[in-house]
Image (cartoon, rainbow, N blue to C red):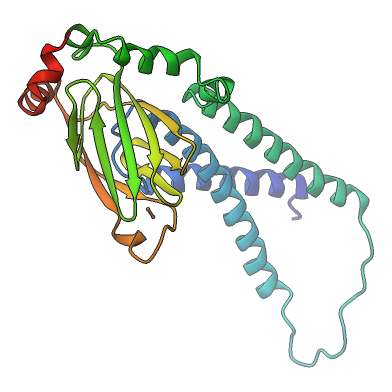
Length: 270
Ligand code: CUA
């Protein structure tokens, strides 16, 4: 009895999709989620991984099948049959990747937008908008009321081969980044020498730090703990050692850290 090829194709397709989902669910490749960005980013990673797994299983499966099924048998000499052109097949294998790539492009844009990625772009040249509100509040001097609520502004200085963190409210300078869980943080990043990059894998965030052109990064940490800050831009011979730590505290622990490190003149000025 001959099984119709449409049925075989359908079964293979179902096996591929189920295999792709199974592979993406059974492998746990990412570190813990420690910011509100992390679950959004992981959603994109999961979808891309499922698509990649389906293609991988399909292509490698077909390759292995062909290697065995169409191998040279003993006694066979000469070339195989010359086959030229198959229009329906060519349309199919052009259309499928086109649809997949279009979907991945639109979906990535949507994820980037949901992570707030499009907001700084709109204010890139004016440095106005959100930036103005966060950084304008410091110079006006209303420190006491704003120090423990609202967006927390922190200045990050990167240099060969260290990060320095300055809290304008309280005038704290620290080698480790301390942030409270659940409160939005706005980093203003500046490089002293060459290009560096601020990367916290557990936050799923990375931002270049460029000399002469401050950049910005906003996030809200969600999970108390200590996470590595990694420089992710080759910046010199000790680039590999350019690391720091972000300490995410419960809000009351962070307030203790803040008030015990804040300079008295800075907090009483207001
Ligand atoms: Cu700084 Cu690599």
